[in-house]
Image (cartoon, rainbow, N blue to C red; front, side):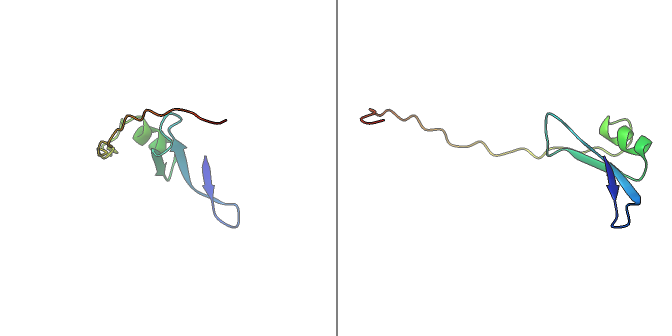
Length: 65
């Protein structure tokens, strides 16, 4: 997508990963943006490891719907 200023001039380009919406790459040209997104350039984005969440098992009887 093109990132524009208030006057409508394109300032940068962005690509968003359809599978992981938090992975967003921006750059000045379309070619540089695509290279970064496909990891063909030197710049790489790495996802931080998430802490595992505690899992609980719940057993209950439904008394009313």
